[in-house]
Image (cartoon, rainbow, N blue to C red; front, side):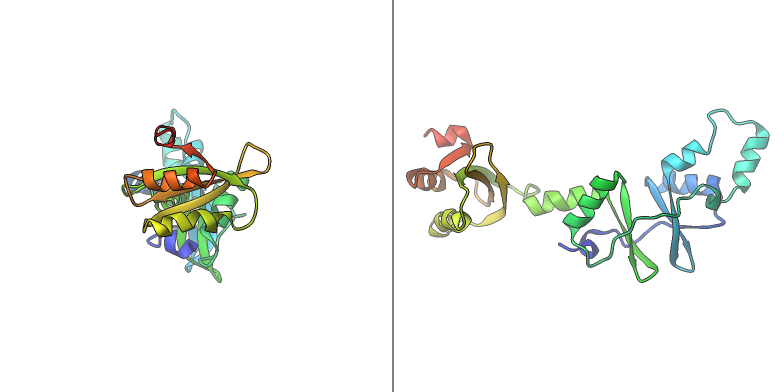
Length: 212
């Protein structure tokens, strides 16, 4: 999946001259944590709700309150913004968020801001990609770590005419093995499990069915 398919395109933005008070009100009203700063649709910076809170002492005098109402976000925004391109892969965007320990990536095409992808967007996309947002059953199988194993196990599904919501392959804790996790569009995977076990493969989950 591409970033443009997962991003939020209706982005709440502020300008260089938006005040700290105004920016904080926007984050509160829209329940968001990040605000891109733009100038003529060009991304020039970003501020977070933490930046805004840190700019506001816990106890303000009247003069400090007036100053915050007049202080533009340009004075506290970050200008070294890490961005994504709409044609980047979602998993690459997720890796960037993880590696850089940041909460969002403004999405730019050329210099123009066209969207934003956040941790929440990534999580929602992951849930959809894994097929857990609809009724499915999960089957985890340990197989030898050699080529062709996914296709071999998938043949059992084809024979049973069972649709797959998602499939993932992980390294196994046992040397020389790997783990295949299927999300199946059936609530009764017992026949598939029986086929897998008869072929000599280990069904890790669900253990209760694997023993039947």
